Length: 237
Image 1 (cartoon, one colour):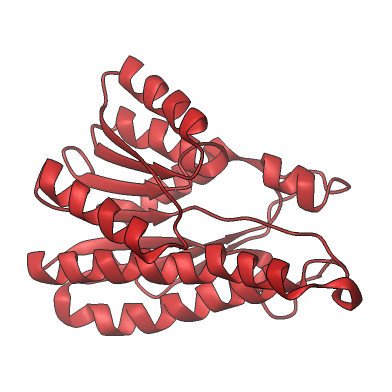
Image 2 (cartoon, helix red, strand yellow; image 1 turned 120 degrees about the vertical axis):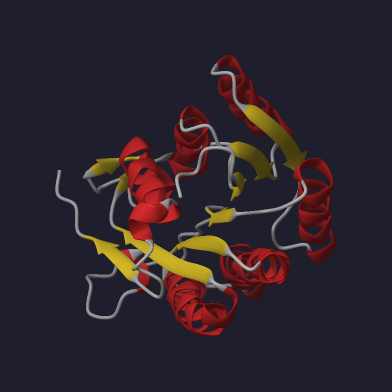
């Protein structure tokens, strides 16, 4: 299948990888459900998609809030009747040495990056199991990959992304019976606001648009053999 006329839910759609993916998927003819915490960023992405003639439903909310995620998928189903693709792009980072790490910061990073991915995967998984097909793609990071260089201050972020990769692996196993493909992508330095916040010394080796092309490949029939894959991207500037 191509993604033309398929329904794609994209979290973190207000900027960065999520926004670039929304624009790319719209050009391929997908019907979009965009989700973001920040209404003004969400409105900007929606306007970009609509100018390309894309079909789009925009919903503001927090992936870490169970009721917000349930509402997201209820609205997606009510509006389009189905969900074919989920791109879990929402994420945050906090730079703090472990000695100074407070519980609230730790909990918030894990809540958005890992709990949020879990909540969205669960709702999508349930719908896709009823449909008998679907694709879920989670954004992890090289920060969560064993043996890759780590940077001080990112303990919560690293742990959350390692959890995303592990969640992806087990969901790919459980998804086989329902024809649900589940993959993760673990990029290195991507040119986004998050990178500039987390590691301004790093020179990005890829753009958000580059990532969107990879997500498109995985979401359509080209990636049909890659369920369970954690695609590690060691890009160099």
